[in-house]
Length: 162
Image (cartoon, rainbow, N blue to C red; front, side, top):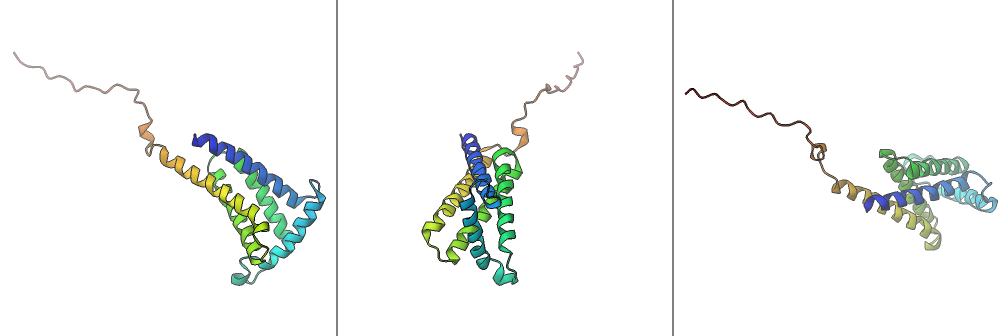
């Protein structure tokens, strides 16, 4: 059951982040939303979390393009690529989403602007928890699944002298 849930969540979340990342990168999907994203990242770059520690403030357009590219790449990995890359992309997308929540909080934009990021952060967290639970449900040893194909060799019988 967890396998089906993971596949559905991975596919839908991955496609969602591909769509959102594409909106951040190009106006071809929707020009009005693209302009709004540009304005949002101009505001978000002012409250970049590492400014206090490093003193470095990212260029808003480069910041938007980097986040959009990361969302598209990680969305594709989350939706279609199996293995450890899927889990790594889940963590990267969760980090991007938490950064978005922080930016809305730091700009004091309220829960209305913050709620979509909170919902998707919770969905990514739930997907990660379901994956970790499915790992504990699997056998711990590779030998527990292995079927023994060779017959055990019986020790040779000793001959009794009569």
